[in-house]
Length: 91
Image (cartoon, rainbow, N blue to C red; front, side, top):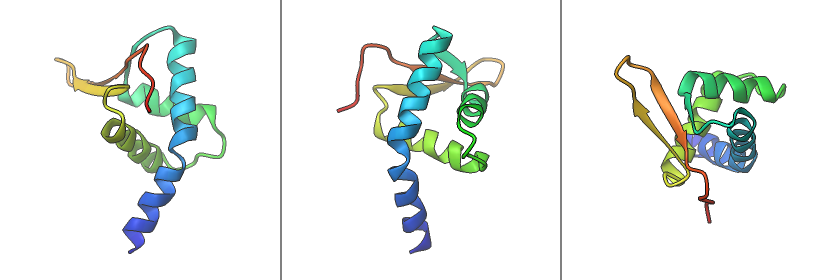
């Protein structure tokens, strides 16, 4: 039950996380960032966020719910890269 409550809390924060990610990619004028850099930028952009694990879980949920908008792949050097697909908007 506690896991479901936590998941619902994270899901309720996704619109805000979505907006932050969109602005990060837009301001950087890039479509690819390392996952670590993306998470760092999300935390940096919102002083209310204190739990890195929570941000990682929100990113994971976005990858699950809107894979046509954001996806991830592992680079040859082992970095996990997150792609933002411009021109696609989640429904």
